[in-house]
Structure formats: structure tokens, C-alpha cells
Length: 284
Length: 261
Image 1: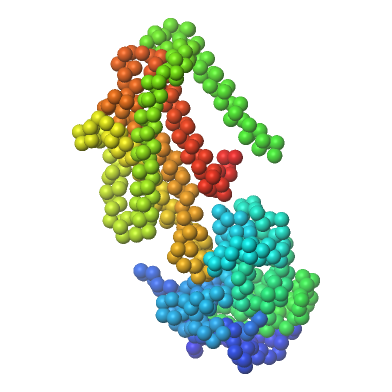
Image 2 (image 1 turned 60 degrees about the vertical axis):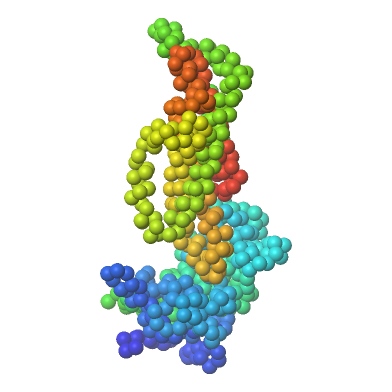
């Protein structure tokens, strides 16, 4: 890919060298991914030449302006859209086999969307336990797990509530608990807090950090919020639009666990500034 | 909160008051303008006649006939409406193929077909059941069709991300999300079925409240005619609230149930 711009930025506070997970087996790999959306009259190239390897237990944020293909990237990873070119590999296994998805690979994913997408006809505990129900787990054990997760995401006391009785933040917590119910090894989050207010979002960020730590999951987190991306990630992947391609990958070598106050440190703000400049470069 | 409580209580207070006003105005109009009792009987007379009617075994036989026609027609319409709605909702090309026919049959004033049904099926219960069925079928079928098409794409994404099978998606998502539409169709359908049965009775046969309307009209018995109309109003409300009650049991989570509470 000759038109591909890939710069390794090294703002202060970021690691000097990004070894990446290439030395060992990658948990999650995108190899030469391109995605074209065809309609009757137009054909849009949403993604092109995406190569990315993500290591076990790594937390990767993907940022970019709206329309840069970041949601398409996540949906491709999650097996919700099939790539036009290239391959998605999980622990060395291809996600797609012809037109169908490898069920074993699919079971490793927990997907969280921008909208909670809870089923209004099920209570919180039933929503959380739904994936287990579909896997044939008996009622007692799946409800036990649902209560365990309700506690983890701070929903104790609301297990019997219906989604409509919850605030936006609580709905999204329920959606996270649902995705965690079957202990997926990889969490794929598509702007999960985009619809929440700033304060709720900050709290949710702290919780995502602790969830990622306790569940030992590999996380891909798509957002348009630079601060959120930097705060959470081990690496930030910046996409540039039309067609969506990787513009840069930045290592965030800040210590964990991270506190909200970290966001006011010069070190943190340097990284944010550099990334913001890169985002604005696309406008020229 | 105070205001909400008040809003819940309001219909229970306003309905009796409005009813009393209507009945009072009705009575006043008769005494003030000297309306002939053949044209408009006094409310007191109607109440008296009605209380006589409800103890007559005959009246109950007529009620039973109308209820049977309505319910049988409605149940068949429900089964056919759901089957056809789901089929057309799922198979797009089929829906496109039969759409002109559906629109055409929607536009036909279906009660105009009753004489035809009388010729084909006679003056018995069958022609009325078919009329009730025909009127109830379309609102149910069209609502189900809409429901099948209205499954939330976000919910579908969730099921796809969970690698759900066809049966699981049907059971946990599509059926549940279509149910409110089925009930919306049923609420309209039951009222339409009653209309179909009564109009069917108008035009032929010797049973049912519709027949009773025609009979009292021929006898120029104003108070009795009013009595039958009130019975019909009760019957219609009862059927509607029966469906409404089912809705509360089957879809307690739905907006239309919550906002009505």
C-alpha cells in the first residue's frame, strides 16, 4: 500500500519503541483488511489496507473522526460484517470460513454497542443471563452468574427491574454485564459511552479499566473521544477517513491502575495534544 | 407525583359526570322541546326497558349468538392474520407480488359483500362468522406484517454477535418484539369482528343483537331499540377490555401497557 501513512509517534510519556505482539502469537489479527460497501449506484471504500496485531490482554483504543470507518472496523472484527479483502484471525484461527463464521471464534467475543440494545421484555437479570440461556445453562446457575455480574457492574438491587426503569448509564452497565456473562476472552466495544453525560462516562471509564483487569480480557475500544482513548489504552490506533486506514499507532506507557487525575498531568495532555493534531491534519 | 396521581384518578371522576350531563341533557331536551317518544324515548323509559330485557331468556340467546359469531370469526382471523402477516413479512417478494391485491381488498367496502355471503352460505351463522373474520383479518394481518418488519436492527446485532441460531432469534427476539403489534391488531380486530357480525345479522337470519335491532325497528319500539344499542355498547367494551387484559398479561413490559397504568 503506497498511499498508506504510518507514523510511530513518540510523545513524551509514550514508550520509545513499540514492539507490539509480533514476537509471540497475536490474540487478534487483522491482515490486509479492506471493506467496500456496494449499493446500486455507488461503491464506498470504508476500510483499506488495515494490518493490526493485538496481543493477549492488551487494551487497544481506536479513534478517528466520524465516518472514518472505525465502527466498520469493529463490526468487521466482531464478525458482523465480512471483509471484502483480507482476514480476521483470532488466536491464529480464521473468523470466516467462506460465508459462515467459526462459532468457536464467535464465542470468544463479547460485543458492546453504542446503544445498550437491551431486550425490553426481559428484566436486567434475564438480559444479563440471556447468552447463558442460549447456551443451555440451567436457570439457577445462570441467574447466579447474572447476580454476580450485576454486583460487578454496580447494579445490585436492580436485577428485577426492566430496562426502561434504568438510566442510560445503568443500561450500558447491563449491556456490559450481558457481554461478560459467558466469560469472553475478547471484548469489542463500539463507542459504548457515546450517549452518556461526561460525569457518567468518566465513572464508566474507571469501571471498564477495572473490568478489563479482573476479567483479563483483551479489549478493542472504539471511541471519538481522545481523552477516553488515551486514558484506557495500552495503544491508541488512529484512523484517517475516506478510505479508512491506519494513520498512526501510539503506545501509552502510563502506569496502571490509572486515576482520573492522571488526565490533568502534562504527560497525559502531551499525548492527547499530539493525537489531536494528527486528527486535524486530515482536514487540510 | 401529585399531578400524576390526579391524572390517574381523573377519568374515574370525569366519566360519571359527563355521562350524567349527557343523560340530563337528553331528558331535558325531550321535556323542553316535546320530542315524540317514538323518535327519542326518555332515559328513564330506556332504563326500565333495559332492566326488563336483561331478565328475558330471549335476550341472552341473542347475545350468545352475536358473541359466538364474533369470537369464532375473530379467532379464525387471528390465526390466519398472524400466519399471513408473518409469511408476507418474512418473504419480501411474495409481499410485493400480492400487495396490489391487498390494497384492493382493503379499499372494497367489505360489508357490501354480505348479500353475496348470504347467497353462498345461507342465513345461518356461517355468513356472519365470515363477515366478522373478513373485517378482523386485515388489521391483524397488516399489524403483524409491520411487526415482523420492525425488529430493532440493534437487537438483531446483539443476537448476531451472540451467534444465535434461527430458532433462538425467533424465540427471544422476533416473537417478543412482534407481540405488541399482534395485540394492536387484535384490539382493532375484535371491534371490527363485532361490527361484521352485527351487520351480517342486519341483513339476514333470525338471531343475534343485530337481528334484534332490525326487529325492534320494524316494531317502532324506540325504548327497546335503545336498549339493544346499549347492550351492544357494553358487549363491545367488554370484548375490547378482554383483549386489553390479555395484553397486560402477555406484554406487561410494553409502552402501551405502562402508560395506561
